[in-house]
Length: 65
Image 1 (tube, rainbow, N blue to C red):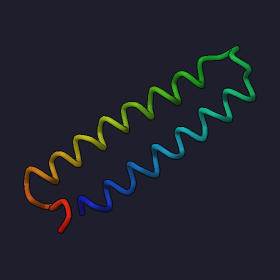
Image 2 (cartoon, rainbow, N blue to C red; image 1 turned 90 degrees about the vertical axis):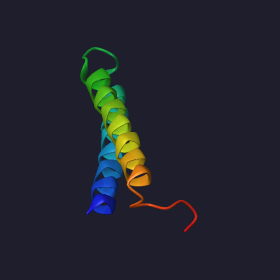
Image 3 (cartoon, one colour; image 1 turned 90 degrees about the horizontal axis):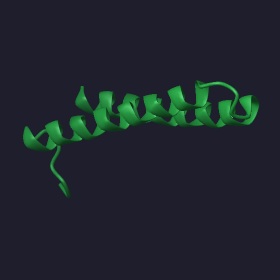
Image 4 (cartoon, rainbow, N blue to C red; image 1 turned 180 degrees about the vertical axis):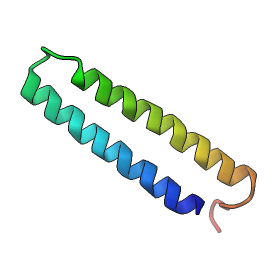
């Protein structure tokens, strides 16, 4: 279950990064959509780090094994 959640968060990071690029090109800095999109990406990255830490602490994920 944790591995599926990690993959979903990774997918969300990629989608948010792509939408930030699209907003940056389309809006040319006139709106805040790029900032919001990249803020969501940062929040998802923090969530991903938390999920990975939880997986390592609970021995659900073993590095190198």
